[in-house]
Image (cartoon, rainbow, N blue to C red; front, side, top):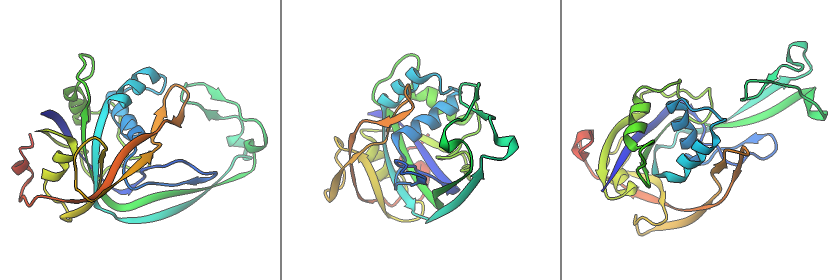
Length: 244
């Protein structure tokens, strides 16, 4: 049995980001493992410079996710004129030092297309593959109850509509946690879970590139997951699944 945190990701706008192509910030159906690492790191009060700790946390995360309400996919057309006086040489990096822009992309009007999912809801069952003294599921639970900084879902403009942490449950696997957790909006939902966990018989293997090399600040690596339709058990209340 493992301790599993139950997270509810619901907001007017959410962005489960995928690999960016040129100026298109696309999204995918389920949260990336790098997004969940950043969410937890933010709750813990970590900074980008603590890359080794973020890499270690990411390597230990085991999660399954289901899309309780798909919502609507929208595209936000964004522009910024970097040639304006107040924009010249005023960029700041996450290291707290001024970033001096250079090259052809340092001036002029930049266009971005940022994809979002509007009015959606996803549930995540999250555990750690190993318990270490310096970081446990209980530590993450407390951080989500009283986060060090405001939390967001994918992008800083995507503020959650309700507390992200919904409870904790003991189950044999994260997919089992999703299966027994009561339906929120629909009993049949699309889900994603670790490839080594047994789920619905009708599923497909998918290769994802959703890990982040936090030291070099790039996405890298591949991991194997399963995706398919999940039929949820018919419980009337959250505590019926022994949620604490």
